[in-house]
Image (cartoon, rainbow, N blue to C red; front, top):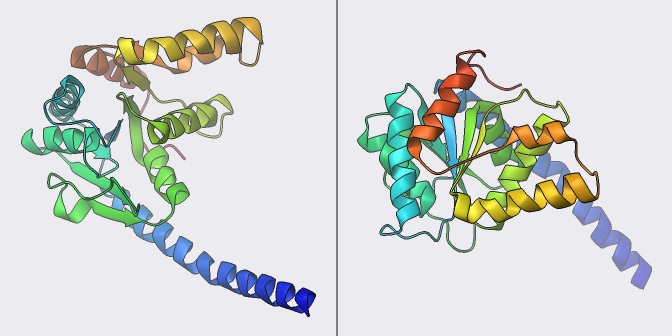
Length: 229
C-alpha cells in the first residue's frame, strides 16, 4: 500500500513536470520576442537592499546615465535597490530601461523607472538568466549578495567554457570586490591551479563610471554589437 502511494505521487510529479515545459517555453518565447527588439543594452546587477542614500545606489544611477549617453540601454532585474538605481539613471537620461522581474517571496517588486513595454516577469530564474546573458553587451556588477554572485559567476563560466562569446564583465567597487578578486587569483589560480591565468582577464575592477564607459567603448571598438548566441 505504501509503495502504491509512492508510485502515485511520483506519477503526479511527472505529469506536472510535463505541463511545466509549456510554461517554460512560454517564458522563453515572450522573452525572446520582447528582448530581440530593444537594441544594444548593458546589464547592471547589485543588491536589492541598497538604499537610495547609499553611495553605490547613487553610483549605479550615474553609471546607468553614462551608459545611456554612450548609446546603450540598461537592463536590470527590475526590483529595488541597485536595480532601481540602474533603471532610474537610464530613465532620467532618456534611454531604454528594461526590467527582468522574478517572482520572489520577499525583496522583489517592480520599480517605477522601467519602460512600460519593457517590463518582463519570470517565474524561472534560469529563463531570466538566459535573457540577461543573450541580450546584454556587458555586465556591470555593483556590490550585491548571493543573487549577484550567481549571475556574475554564471556569465564568467559561460565565457570561460566558450558557450558564449566574450563580453565585458566589470566589477564596480574595489573595496567590495577586491577581496574576492584576490582570492580568485591567489587560491583558485596560484595555489590550486583550478583556473588559467587568462581567466583573470574575464573580469575587470573599477571604481568610477568613466572607467566603466572606457572599458565598454574599448571593447566595442573592436567587436560588433549583437546578441551573444
